[in-house]
Length: 467
Length: 97
Image (tube, rainbow over all chains, first blue to last red; front, side, top):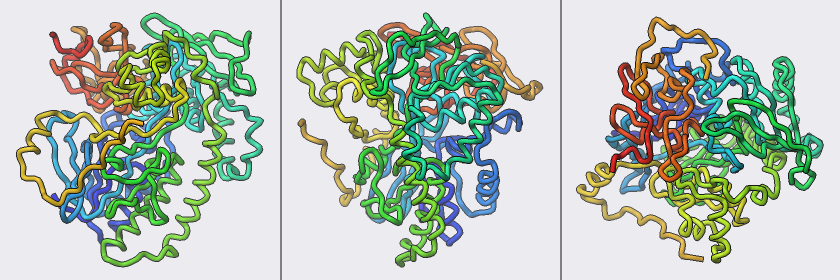
C-alpha cells in the first residue's frame, strides 16, 4: 500500500503526529506492533478483560481525547505490524513490517514521509540474582499490570532510580500488592539544585507522595538493591544505603522478603530504524531540528526516540512533527508560530527531562560492585568475570568485549546488557548498529532477494572500522 | 501472580502448560495467563539450564521465550493466548537436537 505519511509507533508521539497531519489532509498510516494503539504510556487492558478497576490510568483525559480524535479521523490504523526495517527507495520510503502475532509474513507500506515514534525501553544494571524469575523491569511490571491486569507476586520491592518507579509502586499497591519498599538510589538532597527546572512536575510528584503514604509504602532514598535471593524464583532482596560517592555503606545491608522485584535505572531510545536509515544520532537519541526532522530527507522523529522525556514532551513533539510533515509534503515551509504552544511545552519538558536525567543517574561505581559470577548478558549467559577477563586480554571497547565474550550477541541484540557491560568496563555505551530492528525469518529475506532491486537505493552506511 | 480484579470468568477458556490445564481470559498474553496462574518461569537457559520468565514485559529482552503449539521461541509477553493453546516450558533453544 502507498500513503503520504507512515507513522511508526502509536504511543503519545505517534498519535499526536498522525492526528495533526491527518487534520491537514495528509493520508496517514499509523503502524504499531501492539494489538491496539496507545504505546506503553496509554496501554489499555484488552477489551475481553472488560475492566475499569484498580488499573493505573495515566493521563486518562488525554487518552480519552486522543482515542475519540483517532476514531473520527481518516488515519489508517495498522496494529500488529512489527517494523523490522525502513528503506529509502526511489520515490519514497518503504516500511517493512512482520504481521503479528505470528510474525512470519512481511508487508510493505510505501510512503513519501516517515515519522519514527519508536519509543524507548528500560535500562537495568546487573546485580547478583537479577536473572531470577520474579525480578522484572519496572516498566515490565507496569506493562503487565496495565495490559493484562496481572502482577508478578504478592509482595514487591520497587527499586532503581528515576521517575518511572513512582507510578509503578503506586500502581502495584493499588492493585493489591504489598509494596515492601520503594528503593531509590538518588539522594533527595540533590533535588533543590534542580527545583526550578522541575517546578512543573511538583503537583504530579505530590500526588505520588500522597498515594505512597496512603498505601503505606516505605520509601528508602539513597539506597540500592545489592542482591536478589532465591533458588528457582525470587524470595527476597538485600538492600543497603549508599555513600555520597555511590558505594554501598558497609553494615547497612538488610533483607526484605518479597516474591517480586520491579527494577529500573532509566530508559534508552529505540533508534534501530533511524540508524539503518542513516539518521544522525545525538548521543543515544535521534538528532532532530526544530521541526522534528532528522537529517535524512523525508524522515521525521518524535517522542522518546529523540531523547527520553515522557509523554507530555512526546505529545508536543509529535504534534509539531505532524504539522511540519503536512506543510513539507505540500512543498511549503511551515510557520513555527502556528505551533508556538506546543513548542513552549517542548522547551519546558526538555528542561525538566534534562534535570531528571541529571538527578537520576545510576549510582557511580556500579560496575565495581558486581561479583565475577553475576551474569551480565542474560541471553548468552556471559558473566562479569568473563567480561573482566576480556579487559585483561586487551579489549578496550564494548565491541571487542562482545567479540571475545559473546556479551550482546544474543536474542535481544545487546539491548539488555549494553548498559551493564559499559558500567563494568568503563567503556562509554555506544548505540549498536542493528540492520534489522527485530528478528526476521530467513524466508522473508530470501523472498525479498528474488525481487529486482532498485538501482538508486542508497548503500547502507558502512560499518565502523576497528578502533 | 494475582489478578487484581474479578475479571469476567464466564468468558474464560482453557490452555495447558506442561500438560496441566490453566484458565485463561480473553485478551491476555500467554505471560499474563501464566502469571495469573502463579507461574513465573517457563524457559530454561541453553548453558546453565536456569529458569527464566518475564523480564522486560514489552518484547525487547527475549527472556520470556516459550514453546506454543510446538513452535519454540515465542515471546510470551507479546503472544495472545488462544483457546486450546498447548504451552510448554522451552528448554534451551527449544529445538530437539
